[in-house]
Structures are given as C-alpha cells and as structure tokens.
Image 1: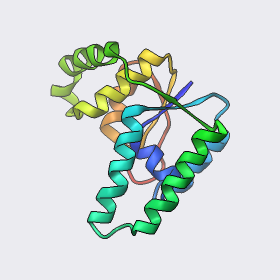
Image 2: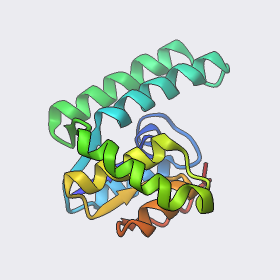
Image 3: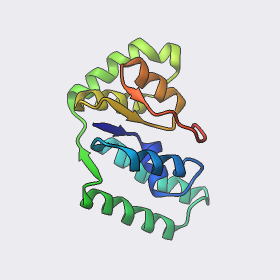
Length: 148
C-alpha cells in the first residue's frame, strides 16, 4: 500500500512543478494508492488557497475536484479514515522528531496514518515530511521536482 500526502495528491490534480513526477510515480505504482480523510481535506483546502492567492481559477478547482472524485470512483485512489491510534502515534513521532526535523503536526499525522493503515511506501513532495516518514521506517519516493 502506498500512502499519498496532500502535496502529492495536489500535484496529481493541478499542474505544478511536481505534476509530471506525480503522474509518473502514480502510473508505475503496483500497489494500492491510499488517501486519508486528512489528505483529502488538505488538498481541497490547498485548491482554495491557490484561488485566494490568484494562482488558480474557480474553474481550475471545479476541474481538479471532478478529476479527484473520478479517481476515487474508478478505484485509482482508495479513501481511508484517520484513526485515533494515528493521533497517538503522531504525538509519539512529534516527541521523537519535531525538535530535530522541524516537521509540522499535520505532516506527522500523515506519516502516522500511513503506518497505522499498513502502508509501506509514502509519496510526498515535502522534504521534512519525507525525512520524518523515512525515519519512521517508510519507503519514500525521491521527489525530483520542487520540494515544498
């Protein structure tokens, strides 16, 4: 199972500097691509933030949401909830890694959720999150694009 974080999911559904890499990695994936409720919410929020900043139009959001929903319906992406256990694991990861890595709480919750779901691989374009995921024992893609 491969867990996708919001930076990766965003790049799958709106063209940015990481889109080509995201499409290539997703197309080559031999395992199930999993998206958590947190990831979906962060991605939708990222669409809105891009509109607010003038980097995306409302029509871009409509198109991106249509594509995202299509990927869930087709089974390309599998949706999973975030468990209470993931929050507990995220707290432990925070105590262990935040002071040295500087990773955000939501990013640790993604890593913890991936572990709780049984994912072995983690796709992200966020450097600190990638480091946290690797430190926690997940295999992480080598993001060739711009890291956030």
